[in-house]
Length: 309
Ligand SMILES: Cc1cc2nc3c(=O)[nH]c(=O)nc-3n(C[C@H](O)[C@H](O)[C@H](O)COP(=O)(O)OP(=O)(O)OC[C@H]3O[C@@H](n4cnc5c(N)ncnc54)[C@H](O)[C@@H]3O)c2cc1C
Image (cartoon, rainbow, N blue to C red; front, side):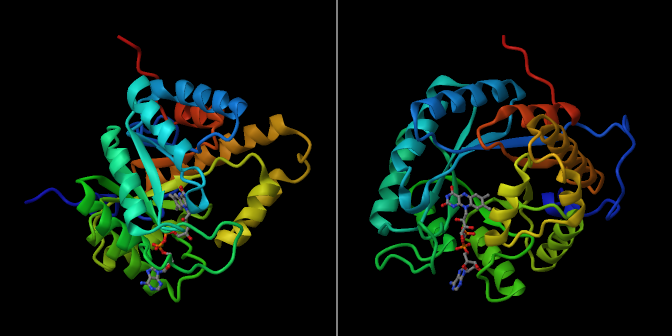
C-alpha cells in the first residue's frame, strides 16, 4: 500500500486527545520560523540576532514576509538572499498579488530564483491601510492565480495560507475551503494557517479539508502571545477568536512584561503539545523577530540545537 498522505497520517490517531503526559515520548516536531524584513538598522540588528539564535534549531525553512503592496520588496529580497549566502538555513520568500502587474510579480519571482530562493509563500495580500480588496487590472487576482503563475516562472516549492476560522471576507466556509483546494491544485504543496487558539477548531478544519479532498499538510501557525492587548486588536480584523481563558491568563499583568512572556511560553507550548497528541508533527512559528519565546517553546518540545561541525 502507498504511504498515506501527510494529512491522512495526521488524522489517523485519536482525535481531540488530551495533553500527553510529560515524557510520553513524543518526538520533537518539525519547525519553521517566520520573520519580517527590518525597517531600520536597529531592527536589522534585531532580526539577524533572532535568525542566528534560532539557526542551530535547524528548522525546515525560515520565511520572510512581504509588506502590503510590495512595500518591503527590496528588504524581503535582501533578507532572503543573505539567508542563502550567510546561513545554513533554507529561506522561503513571501510574495503577494497586491498593487503589481503579473509581469512585475513574475519579475520579483525570477529575481528570487536567481538569488537561489526555491520556496515561495504565495499570498493575495491586503490593501495597504485597509479597505476592500480589488485586483490590479493586469495583476494576479487571487493567491490561486499567483501559484499557477509562479509555477510557470520556475519550479518553486510553494506554500499558501489557510484559515481555520475562515478568511474574514470569504463568502462561506465551503467557498474558502474550495479556494484552499484550488491553491493546492494549482501547485502549492503545503498550507500554513493563520494563528488560532482553539485547537478543536483547527482539528475540525482538518477534517473538513480531508473531506474536501485536500491531502497536503496544513501546518498550524503558532503565535506566542506576550502582547495580549495588541493581539486582541489584530485578531478583530483577522477573524481570530480569542478565548476567554486567554484573557484571564493575561489579566492583571499588563505592566509586567516578564510574567507575560512566561505565560506566553506556557500557552504556546501547551497548544503545540495538545496538537502533537492529536497527531500533528509540524508547526510554523510567528517569531515577530523575537527569538527567545520561540527558542524556549522549541526547547520544551524537545528540539535541541544542532552542534556546528
Ligand atoms: C501564513 C500566512 C502568511 C502571510 N504572509 C503575508 C505577507 O507576507 N504579506 C502580506 O501582505 N500578507 C500576508 N498574509 C496575509 C494575507 O495576505 C491575507 O490574509 C489576505 O487577506 C489573504 O491572502 P490569501 O493568500 O489567503 O488570499 P486568497 O487565497 O486569494 O483568498 C482571499 C479571499 O478571497 C476569496 N477568494 C479566493 N479566490 C476567489 C475568487 N476567485 N473569487 C472570489 N473570492 C475569492 C477567499 O475565499 C478569501 O476570502 C499572510 C497570511 C498567512 C496565513
